[in-house]
Image (cartoon, rainbow, N blue to C red):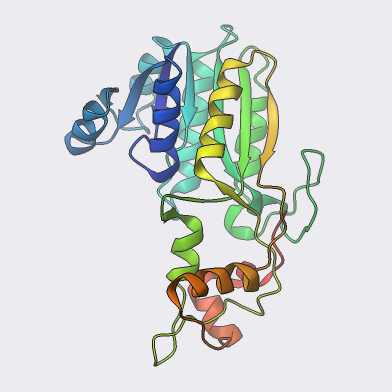
Length: 259
């Protein structure tokens, strides 16, 4: 298949790129500048420098493909606008075609829930409450095949959200890691290679549509995850104050996360 991919230079997107290529797909990578274009071209993808907010340009690129995968995210206050722009471009480009559009999401949208499935109700904290309306809009577009992959916190190859959050957490004066919150909140995780594999399978399987929650099936606490990280780096310190955690990750980091 000829597949359009956003976020091809990012942690998850770069693994999706590899997965697609290893299974014979031709990838057009939508990138923001020439530097990123050089990176994806060196990896065998066809780069297209385009502003994801430029709907006519994105629609033109997508219309020339057999499907699209969206993994790009700035990870800041503009994330909602970018996801909305990508979804709306796909809806326009694939109208009446039945082509697949695979859109990334995250398990934080389920809020304080230690056992979730695709049937679980959303209870999104404020910082991700914008996700569901966008996702519902693309899934309601019945003349295309919309898929939303709800990813747990991805890790692998020494990178991703898990080491970034844990090893980048506050430290005491001796340089020891400080536990995030009480340590009893749950964070579902997934290896990035497994996540990339599912993106590819959802793209290829014509019956795949709707929501899919992807995790490793475990329900590890932040204490267990931090202790594992500390064991690897021989650093484990004291628990911070609630104010320190809220400052670092926001109030919602204190809540139990989804499985």
